[in-house]
Length: 474
Image 1 (spheres, rainbow, N blue to C red):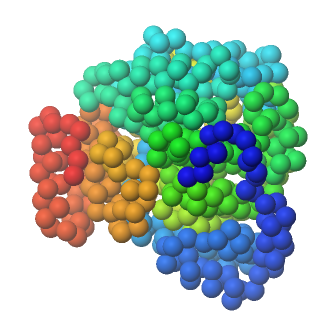
Image 2: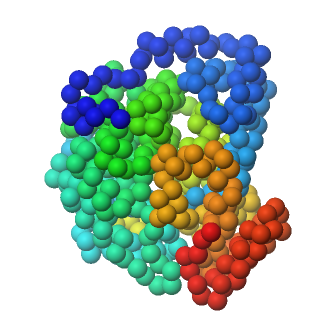
Image 3: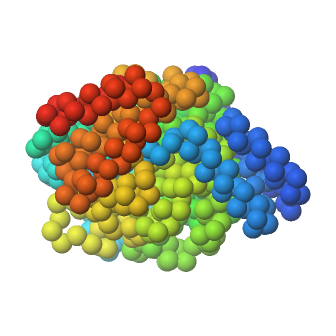
């Protein structure tokens, strides 16, 4: 790794805008033969270059678009099967010093009810989430200088310390907070965070400056190298993202892919996850109600499919910004991680008057409860909801995880471990209707399990869970 990254000096942007525009131009109006050549390569599950991704995105032949979707379905099923990781965001603070024109947390939004959870309020939120069945949380923080790394680390310790009824405990805490220096990231690593997540929002520098007018977030390079500093501090898994709607979506996809490539070149491994939120209405933001680059559902679905083909072993995260019907479509073409029952402001899960636009970051499109979401993805769509955290607790992270993933590891370990966490959810938290649906899915999965030895191990552990054991994995 380039050790100068921690110094914050002498750094240049690795997002070459001139190169990106030239590749987009070169990819315009691609011949059908070129599109199919790219798809043939994509099916090998070795990824695509940014230019090859642009070729697929610039295609305007609807029949070829369907071939893109089909290739994405094949690649996703081949790597992830029908396993789907489930998590929930937990907002710790909406206090923010940044002035981001698209966000309800904008420091200039004087109508927002500013809140930062106390330790007692954090515990209450976690207890509610645990009683719903969650095991994986993403902690979200407004970017305010008064909340430094030591304070954030303290909130992580608070979350991990909470246990509630039955099997209630949080087994993986991921973080979405302001970029830190290397020493700050070390503090987060020491308290056992999983993935550090930070969205660059837009990779186009002029647009970045236009919509970020105050606070530390105005520093494009400081944010661009945040993942490098996190990895230098020992955090193996990082998650990146762009906010679609601020600028040309093809440029943003290529920015993400060049960012991923730079991480792999400099740090030995690319991002663990990529997120692709679309702008949603937010209080105090005219821009959020009228995004300058609004993608149609068809084009957005193609973005997700192309990301799956371009970075086949990277987790793709879908939040509740999109509605339930469209989330189903996106699951099929590439999404591997899904939030469920999400609420987007501090204190929301224990708030009896939920649905407060005066405190939330943005509006959500899928307001179903976690139980309703699980019943739908398992019963209607045949996905196995997973809360598995075995790899992280056994040290299979970062480069080690990616090496294993590329040899079929996900199918061998993650699916059976996902079934075990699903069984735990059904035993302890599911409604009667959801439990019936889930038990039928587990039965079918066992019938179709190809490895008789591992099926026996899995069947044994499922039986032990029915007798009261918990947190079992292969």
